Image (tube, rainbow, N blue to C red; front, side):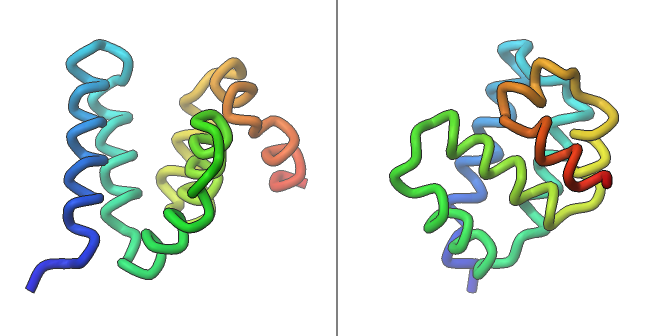
Length: 102
């Protein structure tokens, strides 16, 4: 039997593919995103969905990035070392990263 969140995972992967096709996301970085979402079990996906429900798009995106950073080491490394300061600012991560690194 497939996961009860298989549709959610499939939708996320479709969005990542669209990001690549539009040129918004490098393919190697998209693979890290894909693996980060694949690494979450159903309970973690459910928790993330509950935590982001009702948030604005920007706040939900920022929360999702933080959630993935806390749950998937390669994703955290990608964000820390392969994203620019502008991305980190948009995702409201500057203070979070400073706090995490200290």
